[in-house]
Length: 326
Image (cartoon, rainbow, N blue to C red; front, side, top):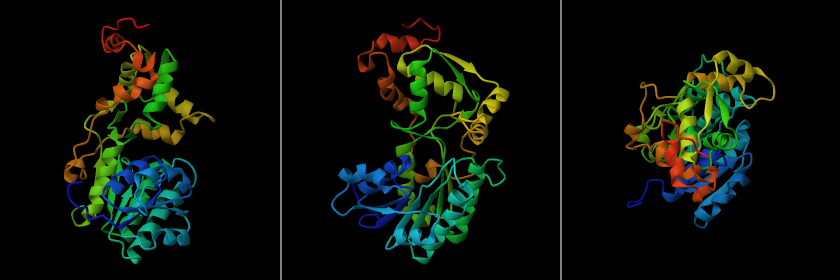
């Protein structure tokens, strides 16, 4: 960076920092010269970050955020706090509803300079899903304990190594025809690096960003059908996508052992787009990047012959007339 960040040499405790988004957040903060403490039940999952840090810049703490003593130990000496913890299974009311309030309260008592709590678009206390209601409860508890906290609500976060694009990428690579659940559901996919930048910017200036909710969505709104089609095009493959009726999708999600739970189906059907009721990337001075900027490169691994695949295959896949591709 061209100028010294307010985070330089400051200690930032990142709860849930060993997860997918945590990897990006850690890199953004390390680049600003911050000292990081990755607090997680499995901090060893973040050991891959070690080569990116200077000597003494990165430390790890085994932490269970449902236990107050564990949280207090992870906060010891911290100047800033980021909470990234989220899940789709387990005791979500405790993990995403109660525990964030504990983190915020202890951070306030410790005199922490700024807190950023990462929630999700669609957080709603009245939602029938444990995920959305738990996220909403967590936001309320954080703001009650630390009113100057910044709440970040990202849409579905994408990246080179995510479990979203790559899951569909693998299926499209293998199958000639695929069902699409919630084909008309609208998604505003957001790049992981942009989410990480938003968190860092909020930490740097809590006076400007504290006490506000930010909804973080990418620059374009795509349906689930369009996302699948784009992935197929980037692979240079012609695939048949079958739009599944809601009734069939709901039944599928209710069956045991399926990769999609009933709650996940409910969330998918509702979509994930910016509501217009809260601040956005623009208020952080950030221009989010579109999926198309990266998708062709990332889908190389799934193409026939990989990076040696014929360029005309990819061109034909984009041809709406549907030229036959081998």
